[in-house]
Length: 102
Image 1 (cartoon, one colour):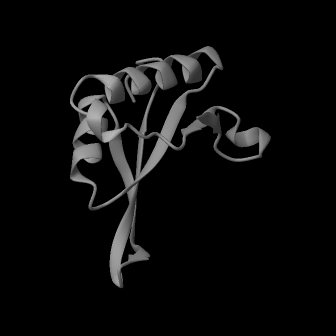
Image 2 (image 1 turned 45 degrees about the horizontal axis):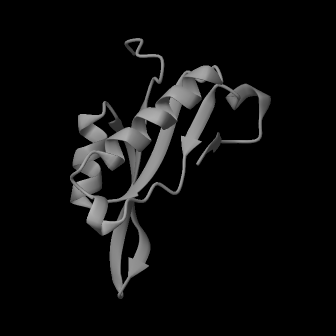
């Protein structure tokens, strides 16, 4: 799901990728990469200059996938979540869906 990041006109150029999930049996077969590509294309068609997503810091597979697709870490909210009683970081990543350099 790709939607506006914030409900403000001054942030209308930013879209957010939310709720990306790949079934375990479909992993490592290109499904995640295809979903990321479709989200990027949709954001670009909507005129976005930035596409952001958030990922749990411990999700190393997702972090690697996002990095390989061009996303860069823009911020980390340390210990934002408590999962099984342990703090887990919330990592904000972003890219320019049009492919323009920063």
